[in-house]
Image 1 (cartoon, one colour):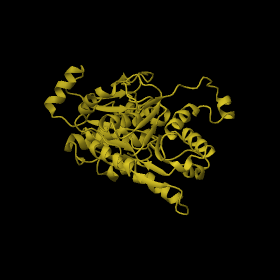
Image 2 (tube, helix red, strand yellow; image 1 turned 90 degrees about the vertical axis):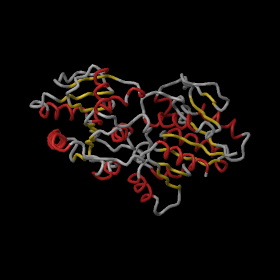
Image 3 (cartoon, helix red, strand yellow; image 1 turned 120 degrees about the vertical axis):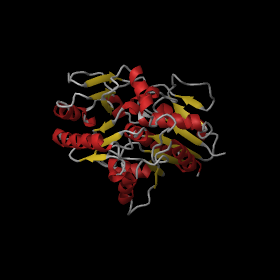
Image 4 (cartoon, one colour; image 1 turned 90 degrees about the horizontal axis):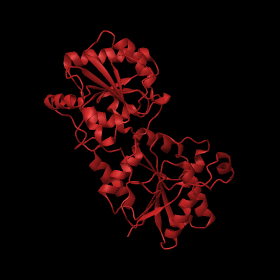
Length: 364
């Protein structure tokens, strides 16, 4: 039997906001036997299962201390891994989006002369690796899994003169049974349940309120765009900061993942205003699958996600409120005159495909 070990610094299964922990929770539910061992902190959603090896957080959280003793923070993970290695001749280790954990595991395996027994798959859920010496990273992994072809090309170009690791690409998958368009009569019922005006046109913004997510740019653009349009409303999910005090804007705070589909379904437009490279953002993809008219920053790899303008509108110079105002005006008029003209294939970014591709990768 293939020995697949998942090492996570977040307790699994998880219902916390975040992309990769949600994806892996779905994987654990759909393919419960895919991982033979899981090393992670204990989750509040944990169900008794002997495959779990729990770790406790480090007792000393001092950054200076952890910098001096480089392996301290993740040594408990390695202790649990050694128990598995003592019983198995070959294993595959899966590490998700944690470079420091990767380096700790890799270096301790070398120290104990166990590195040859292990295949390490690193699951990168961002766009690129943010470290100075990238060669050390590629030396530490046997297989790198990225989310988009744009990201894969960058890594393959770096590795063109070497043969450090294999590059694989799998898009995130969305559950189309939950995230799907609904007819106007259902939209009307949802709006009524949410105490929203049935005749307004809703725009949706969903993310954490960090500067790199661009909410401040959207708010500045909205101030100008909405002043002659009393029938539009902007719903902001992910932050309860009403510091902007803007008319026709509602801050809804943090909303559980299982309640998000109805907000996508009543939104005519979805605004994705990131000012940085993303991996494969779930919010934008959920909005696409739910039938929203999507406007997204023209920053890699988002053109690929929107099929270079076939699934939605790409906003050039997304750091500029003026650019957003221009695109908001044009798409509003387009929507009023022509309705929603973008269609995404029903099989695109499907959860079923993601689950199948992940299983194939882990069992090869």
